Length: 60
Image (cartoon, rainbow, N blue to C red):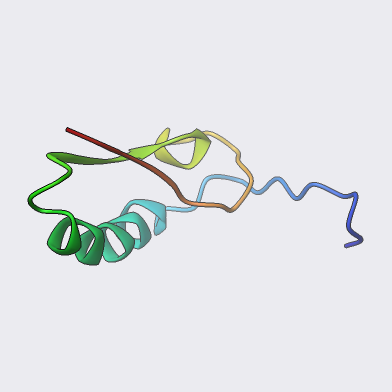
């Protein structure tokens, strides 16, 4: 893959668990600042092909 290629993968059942591993320390660190840490983007949609990048959104 070169710098201009975009990798799209079939849905991976481990994406929700990967998000939870990423979100746990964020929640601990931002507990007084961010009330919500959410899994967003195409990896959060079951069955959806996606770029293999776990996105999150943090908000009050």
